[in-house]
Image (cartoon, rainbow over all chains, first blue to last red; front, top):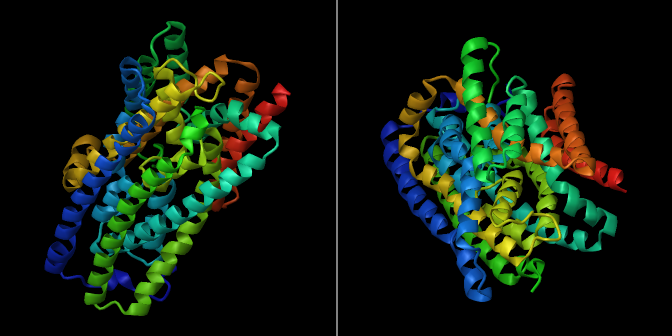
Length: 238
Length: 233
């Protein structure tokens, strides 16, 4: 294992100092900043109304929210629980504020912990994960800003056929790509959401009903398959 | 007013800046606390710099892959909206696209078609910004995550992984099925993207090139999109 000449595994961190000078202020500032972030999420919808008078019809908004919550709901609970051992306390606050957790924050924390020879869940691992995730946030925000500006510049100058490709076929490709990625990790479960969705769509159910059926139906089927057929050795890794 | 002009107006960029400011203050505060404790525990300055450097180098590849996929959000909505939602607003690009689709469906519109208008965009702004509050509320319960992990997972990390996989398959399965049922170039886009994604991930494992996984999603996404366009003519 590469440790870059550092032996942080042997580093002794005073438990009192860790609790008083790190854990307590992290929880305090975490709650304050997450609270501010939560309030700030309402600024774009309110601004849209104040500047343009635009607001979606109430029933349409509710239907959209139901579909959105049906998709995201399981992740509200599962992701913090699943990622917490690697991210630690501050890594969790930061990751759920800045987003892009599984594709960016988590890998950064894991690789930094591995490179420095510390274990996830340890005090050393917590501190290393904090620095790794913070560095990734500075990096990603800078890159996203440059990417958004450059992307806008490039899209304006793109040929019409490419713009048409983006507008008409981007979404089907996104869904297919992500589905393919996760189907590989759980091939036994993959046919069921397609089957459940097909019959629910044929039955002309509202979007939020079909998504709920697809998500929770697949989880139930997954539980049955996992308990019935999968040993610890065969089960997929997160 | 065309919704695309609204989607890239200065106020959208300012909203993104507000979210970014909160996230940067938070991560800087936490990092300084961690660095201070490491130094107090005897870690020298140059070692701390090595940790920071290692973290930046590690993040470079995933960030480049993120930008590549983010162009999809830039093209689908606007650069300003991509900045708002990807700067520091909880969601990943694919999550934002699916939530935008769900939001538009709620008001009876199809995101990405000529029929999508300013009302659909308003629904997208409201839904994408408000639904992600669920993750922020979950973060507020960070103190209770360890006992909750024991209760829900029963200490079985693999079962937690199965839930994540099934939930993702379930959510993306619905929209995958919807586009497959449209047939023609839409089905081609889905199938090609699915095949490329699975193929590239498999290749990354087979050839022991884990870095390929960072780019697999973006390459599959663009491959599927181009395939659909070529089929449509």
